Image (cartoon, rainbow, N blue to C red; front, top):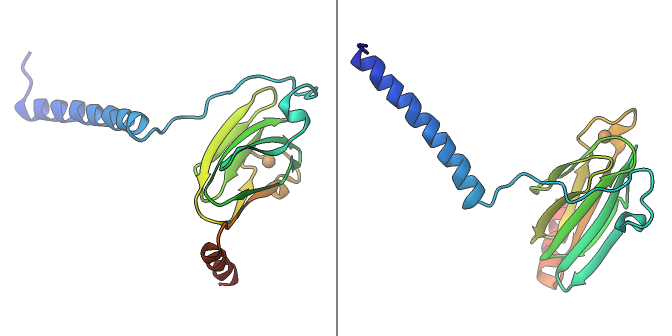
Length: 170
Ligand SMILES: [Cu+2]
């Protein structure tokens, strides 16, 4: 079969482009450690007693290392405020007590679906003091737009405390 040389050139160019795209995904996943959040386990959404979600909140694992358990329920988060010192690494385990919710912390890569029966995990290192708002980004009913909370990253020394104060004023 005869293929015109221009047509053949385009065929090769198209194949090369597909190859480049696959390479980009591979580089992002391996070199950039970019991965989709995966489920961390299962819980009974109707009975969270006996799980870590029975007492939701933030706890210190070691200096600079925190984990929090968060429950989303129409239309609140328990807790809806987390306080950690600047420079801390924070892991948040999430689940829902009723319908599907979404969890996104503005200004970070924390972004995950919160699904009844499933445990989701997000992790981020907070190097800059300030307030980080989080919102539900999966429509869950009448008061969905009010379903928010915040992570307060407290400055640890005077220099950064002054900087954070300036940012709040401006
Ligand atoms: Cu919602």
